[in-house]
Length: 390
Figure 1 (cartoon, rainbow, N blue to C red):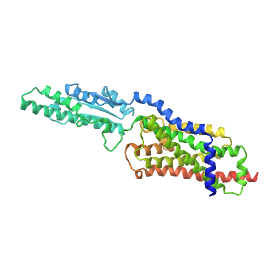
Figure 2: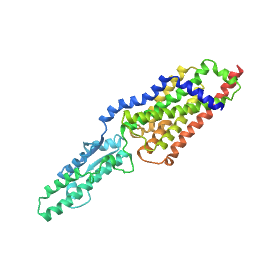
Figure 3: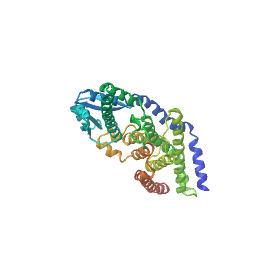
Figure 4: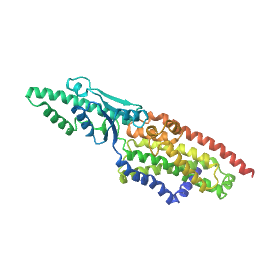
């Protein structure tokens, strides 16, 4: 009962600062809303093509690829795209080799070359889209040839009619957004929201432990450790309250995002909230470590903001580290709790993977939290002995 009373009192104390709670809820929503304007302008995936055949057939294939609303086709030279692929500027480029039209006419294997340097979702989707359209064009060419011979019609006109029919028929056209039936489209606004929720949860935990610093600042800490109560229980009550606040803020932001930003990221609500909870536990462990070294709540807030921004950038809250950052930054990001949380959340929400499949990410976050609490407990005991001796 004592710990329940402590939790109740801590909640009242935290919720008394309504402006801070409101700011924590609105911040990820507002930033995601602002970022959505840039996302809408760059929502298409660039597809780099090299047309070495420069024939009617190769141009027809390019036209079919351009019909995909999610793709932005860029025609370039082989030297330029090879350089971009080698420098990791783009994941994949497609080369339509010479003889493409001739091979298509005589039913030979289509000469399409993929230049890839690393694997990611966009690279796989682009490759599948282009190869699928190539197969579609190959089938149309064969069918139009047979139809024109039987019905004594012009082969080129029959081919055009079949292509137009294929482009309008959703049952035949392969949509880029649903290439993998087991996956949900990785909407950029949703990804942005995930990143900013993960980042701003730092402020939730900092707000949750702000009272701990204020107690040191106003001398209450000395009275608490001298009172006839278990200080460990007192700290546990603060941890529980910080978790409750973090979970509540996350739920409110997700619900608000659905109605305000038209973003729905709740594919598996239990798995998603479990990942957020473990991530909050990891943040609590980290925050409790540096809380032992800070004596003023203003310093605590500033220090927390710096850590939030730094780990947010290195952890992939602003952009995908795996796709855009150099190898050194990718290695550094592995030490950021955000990167593990974002990876697990994306796998569950967009790839329909189970919670069990994310055990490695969960274990890392849990280990961060446990190590943080162990180190924090040692430091707290040292501080308590020092205060009592004084």
